[in-house]
Amino acid sequence: MATLTNSPGPIRVLVVDDSAFMRTAITRMVGSDPALQVIGTANDGLEALEKVRALNPDVLTMDIEMPRMDGLSALRRLMAESPRPVIMISSLTQEGAESTLTAFEIGAFDCIPKQLSYASLDIVKIREQLIEKIKAAAGAPHFRKPRAVVPAPPPRAPIARPPASHFVSVVAIGTSTGGPKALQQILPMLPADLPVGVVIVQHMPSGFTGPFAKRLDGLCKVNVREATQDEEITSGKVLIAPAGQQLTVYRRAPARYAVRLSHTPTDTPHIPSVDVMMLSVAEAYGATAMGIILTGMGGDGAEGMKKIMERGGLTVGQDEASCAVYGMPRTCAERGVLKHVVPLDYVPEEILHATRYANHSAKSLKH
Image (tube, rainbow, N blue to C red; front, side, top):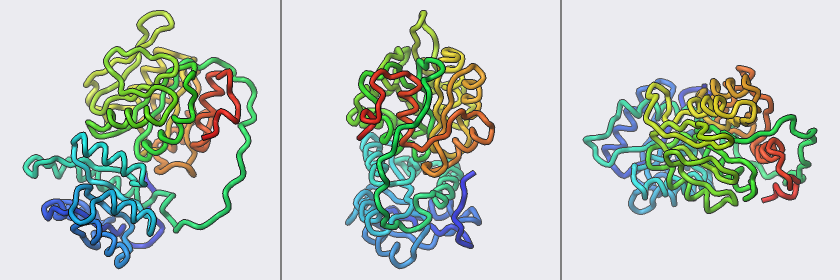
């Protein structure tokens, strides 16, 4: 469960949208929870910045397409002048997905998809999701106190660790809130000749994972793709599960593995599910699997990480200090299914160590 801010009283929310209908709908959804309070609304980015200065909200919800100043421009100004958590309200379109990914890069905490038609807007369906994300945003460690000017930390030394005890032949990563930024930090640090394949479940709305994979591919030395049916897992390739489909791994021939996409099971909290993916990875790869759980709300992935550990595989979790939301890693830690707990920027080194990457050195990990 997300940790709320230490300030007394409800979480104070500013709703920003040029649609009167959406402002009313979001205000009603947020106001239905006694732990939250809408302290104001704004019609566009300029008014939002004015009201942030006047009202000092804890969290903002912000539309992207608005007159005078759009959501991305307002987000840039806000992160430069008075950073605080922002949840973007994005349309389920290709353009909306691209804008949301840009928002993540600027510093948005999370996003909520909205339908294009008022008639099709399922208020009840997204209410609980919105409330959960606002509460998680209010407790995000990177926004709890104003940024202070501190000296740059000294270069870190590589982890002193004996040779890997066993060979890892696949890496499975699960993440949710905060994941886009985390993946954009660690995947570019992996070499093009990474000797294993990587499979990832990132909780995202439908239509977002394709553009996200394409964006990552442009940043990385490894090949990043949105997974397709029966696509083979090969060295130096990263496959991201498509939103709205479950991804499982199966053995298609000796030492050859591929992914299967389906719309079942449907009874998981998220589709794709980290647990569904990791359980299949444990079954297919056994002791040569490596499971990594990163920032995110809830407990998705804990059962899969447990199975990987039971089969003799390696499990790694992101530490609390570097998480946007310490939910998924916390659940794994509390259940005792993590062999290593490390800061986010140590994750690439964990991967290289476990895969016995021949050129593994501190130099290879520099940005």
